[in-house]
Length: 351
Image 1 (cartoon, rainbow, N blue to C red):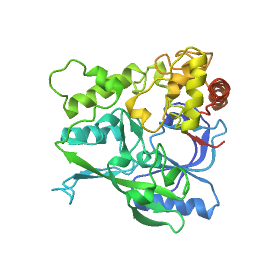
Image 2: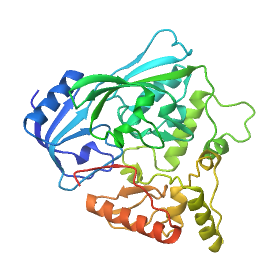
Image 3: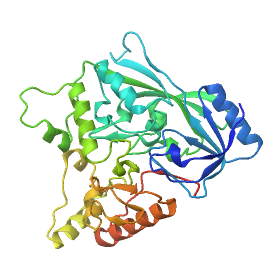
Image 4: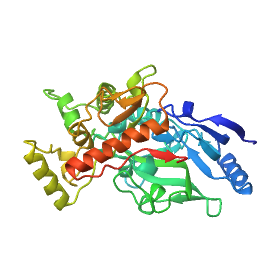
């Protein structure tokens, strides 16, 4: 298949920012992915793999090589159970993540219900070890089928090989750029109970006499995300974002003590959430808001969501340069006041 030329990338991202790709392919099967890689190699073009475009900032100059959109479909539930009594789903990397979560919940399988409403495609989930509301995909991924760009061969990687940690894996750290995710296999718990460990979810179900089921938990998560402007709703100005722009920092004991002292000096207490506290993880949103960047902050074309302090939004006509300028302003101020360096979560392309 012949790639298209000079295709705008902004419409393919949730932030709606960025220049064009010199070449563009939407690959719907493994063969098309391999062909595209061969095309890029033959012309010595840099290759960028695009998923759902939800966790992405594309440079204003665009991408000088081949942008390869992975659109491999399919959500296949295997019959019976695996050796651990789990229900196994094989899911194409191009499938909508939330569509898969919906299918899993309808099949009464637990393990991904708290990840409802997260935009983007399945292929991106192992890369960032996507997580929210007390769950992360590393807990349920059984294997990841990849194309190894070292030899253009298809391989099956086990979870241990993927090196999952907080918002990270070999795909975005030690082996960044080596693999293209083609399919992901998830092992879920049949008739399992939903995980209600996060403060927001506990509050939502407070006072209930009966524990919520998976479907009710999924709806609750989507409701909470919508309130925070973290559910993609067409026409909602707060949704033109790349989601949470900063990771919750994981601190050493020493850093955590220093942060608590700085907070006490200002008459503040660093909030402690059970889901975060175990790893000395602190709320990036708390740090951002207490550094002078309240919800709704900004002027002109770029700002912070009116509903979530971690979402940088394109208010119309913003450029990637505008977004990066605000990002750097926030990082500098948080580090100056709190001694903590915030790490961005989205993938930066073409910079």
